[in-house]
Amino acid sequence: MEKEFIPYEQALALKELGFDKPCFGYWKMSDWLIQEKTRTDGYIHADQLCSAPLYSQAFRFFRDKYPSLHFGCGKIYDGNKWTDQLHYQFHINLSWEYFEGNYEEAELACLIKLIELAKSGSLKA
Image (tube, rainbow, N blue to C red; front, side):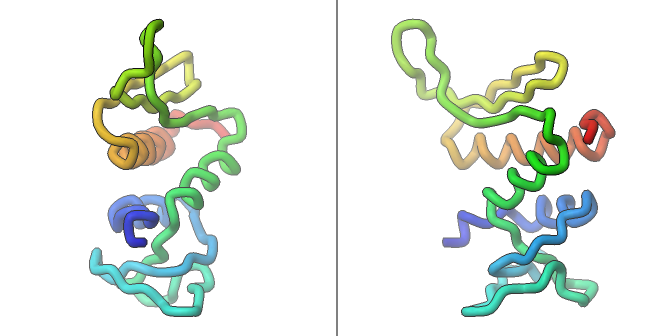
């Protein structure tokens, strides 16, 4: 189940970008802690605690905050067959980036790139 949650570093970055939705679990200084049968109400008011969003929540955050942004992860079709190479793509100035690895790795790479673009001011709301 833990693989459904984004890593600690990206959770902190999303918090800095304004993510404040309720989550099923939270991080404590990069150590995983989960609340059973309860949800956090946004970010817990303690310096060392940070909500742990699901990947779906993180990607929804970017879709909601930047509605003109298009991104996704998927396999590449080389004209004859689907390859094992995955890609993530961003429709920003027709910029497409490719990543070789499994789907989970591509998903994380995509999230890291979205955070990087948001922090740099490249994304417009």
